[in-house]
Image (cartoon, rainbow, N blue to C red):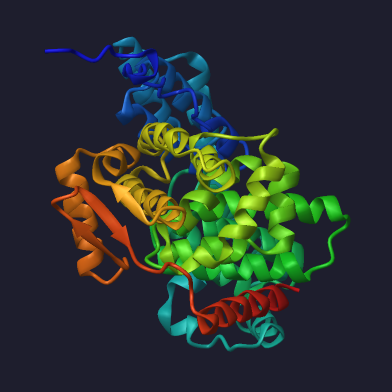
Length: 429
């Protein structure tokens, strides 16, 4: 029997290096150091970096916080000793001294806020509240400002729940817009770290409204705020039940597209992944393709290259290779690791739909290869698509082919789609 010679192209390509497309450093540079810690924990569980490197990074991260005991525990674990450097011991003494001083200074306002009966006297009127606190409880505006410092100190100690509560009260009493804005960022970070996604989404919307409507000292300052916001918002977008809708709606606005192009092109990974996974936002695919093409020479990874291969080059073999690489990328990305199966399923559907647009009759073996599936699995997958009315086609089992029906959208559907896009663009303006 004649045997087919295996060509170089058909040989299995080596597995990609898990760290090759890791963008944790780029993300971390736009986060509060407390928000970076979950990313390091994730990388540690993935085992793609040496354990000691991750542990040392944790200590470096904690160095400028008040979580000294935690840093000491990590040091002991790394070095298998009960002794810690003198600088850690001294740092702990300083933190405890500062805590006691702040507790004493903030006692009047904190004691008031912890008394439910007294808090009932507050109204939805800052001017009244400030006067009432001064007249009845001898709590001055300076005491209120101390509450912000105390909340920040609690945050640096890792007490995010207390910090969030104090910042809510502080923003209700504060009359300084800049400090109130900073407090909102702190509240947002606290809700993220507590995994309170509904509350975090509310804070995200408040921050976005403030950033987009306020006059900053310069356009650059406003741009930087937007860049920070889109990075912090990833925690919400990939954990909230409607997060992917919000991600696409926000990042496809012109002002945030500008932020991505100017200072965060790596965010295209998350935008592309959200569009592929989220069937409700396919209407932005054309705009996304243009954006990825324009930024291709500045940033690219398998997720963005998958879109280029499939929708720009119509390179189905290349798209198959990139999809395989995407599995590695997503599995080792903190925000996307839970989306691997959904991404692969929808990416295959994109490959299939695109391939079907240019063919009327498709060989099942060839199609299985394009989808990176065996023939039996591919046939079941296509049968399910037909059964669920997601595909206008029929399977010819005798010929081993898929016969496509008409794939052209009706005029009514085209008009509705264009109207939706026009409405969305008008809203953004």
